[in-house]
Length: 194
Image 1 (tube, rainbow, N blue to C red):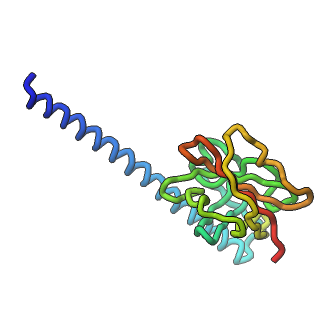
Image 2 (image 1 turned 90 degrees about the vertical axis):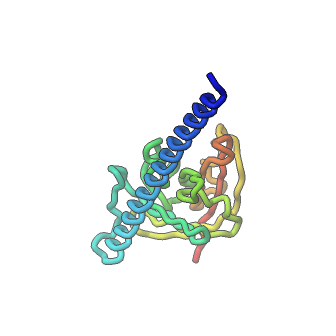
Image 3 (image 1 turned 90 degrees about the horizontal axis):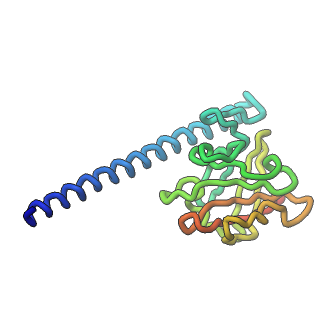
């Protein structure tokens, strides 16, 4: 084979690989965009129903998964429905309840979400600092504010973060992957009286 044929073959392989990668990336971002639109519609529907006093509790599902509340973090413009269970599929859809009692009950509730590179889900929580506020609306449409008191990174096998640090308090813990899923970023917050 001549050098020209080798170069043409290598070029063709690189071109095909580039096209395939581009299609995969575009498909992923279209899926994320469509999911974000669906979640925004669910949030809008929840607010519409609860503000019009049509219902006093959140009664919403996303792809058959029960919504048990809403998480809102004003500093990073995050607002997502919280799904009742954590699985590979539900984590693709929204923020999920990973561990603990119901939202806004005494004890610690842990919420999990993907650390998406485009900033969706928990993709921006690394910007949060001690003193920032997390708002949790529960299924009864009650909103409580929590102040972040600790952020840290742990090994994925460490599950100590699921325990409350103080008895008889309301705590929320956010968990996401970091460093290419090698570690977990933990954000801990405690209820504040406003």
